[in-house]
Amino acid sequence: MEPLISIIVPAYNLEGLLNRSVQALLQQTYRNIEVLIVDDGSTDETYRIAQEFAQLDSRVRALQMPSNVGISKTRNAGMAEARGEFLTFSDGDDWTEPTQMAWYMDRFAKHPQAAMVSCGFVIEPSGKRNQSRKRGMVDQKEMLSLVSRPSGPVRGYTWNKCYRTAIIKKHHLTFDDDVKLMEDALFNTRYIMHGQHYYIENTPLYHYVQRDGSAIHTGVTVTKKARDIMVVNARMQHIIAAGRERQSKKSKQSISD
Image (cartoon, rainbow, N blue to C red; front, side, top):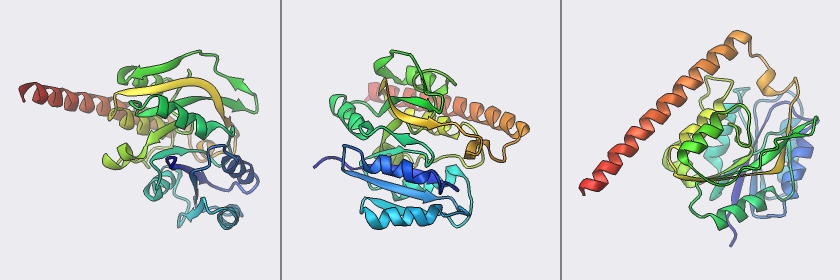
């Protein structure tokens, strides 16, 4: 049987956009998926729409946070409920190409050593695409570099990447909920430190909508942005240093054995 992919969809006050996002996921050519719509305490009809999708399609589950807690806690709640062997994310105001999940599974099948697979994306409404032709397997060091860059074919986003759930569960990986910027790059840094090989390709399969009312633009002052960037960068460096020290100890132990 084909592996199950869990798709986590955080949503906050997206009654006018959620339908497009979820419909695109349910029209995936790869059918063995579960869509976890996690409503972040919306004050509009977002949760009702999520419930309707769950009633219409058994692959959909509608979850609701008790209040508006932010995207990190919302994603964490979705990950805690995920049942799939693989896991990915799709924001409730974006949409996917119908072949995105099939593409992920094809690349994992062709590259079983890959801990993560990353595809390209289109920025909407401009339609801008990254023109890099970078593709193939990369090692841990290069993947860390690609994730930390604010531009390029990979970046720190979660919605253009597919993860092995076992790695997330084994190492208890979650999103930090005290930062509102770069929390996805921070999560990816933690994840990457627990693998060695990664597959990247710039095939544009995800449509990222940039809008003023999105969660990243709401309630974040210039001071808060500067503080978060500084905190996240420091944490990323600490994670990398600790991970390399751990790997060095493991390598020395292996040699001595």
